[in-house]
Image 1 (cartoon, rainbow, N blue to C red):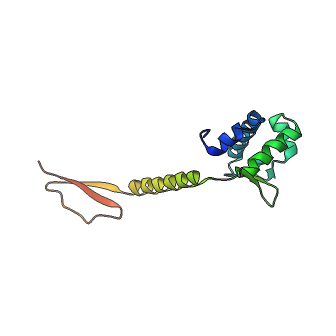
Image 2: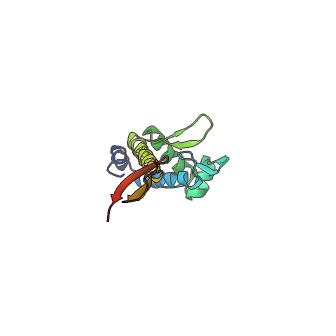
Image 3: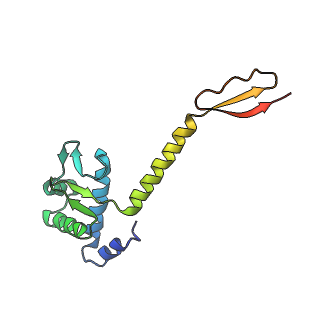
Length: 138
């Protein structure tokens, strides 16, 4: 994560430690309520600068500075509804798509019922999702 160009740009700033702190806390908080990329205290209450000041235990000027730089670098944005949101990058979207594809494959595999026939067994028509894996003879 810290090898990213945007983080290297942050590292050139005098307030880099503060900005990294705000970013890390911001990303952590977005995952707490599980509204994907939006920053909320609870499902219906978004964080404001004032509540972030309390949560991060930093001054309002420091929080504003951190948020302004993260917005400038297009890492977060403030929506029309005044909700802070982590902006997804292409890598995250690509990885999420891969995860969904793997989940779909897993579901397909779980739907397959393996059927074995032994020599002398009367073969029956296969049901939906069934597949003959082995015919045994003794």
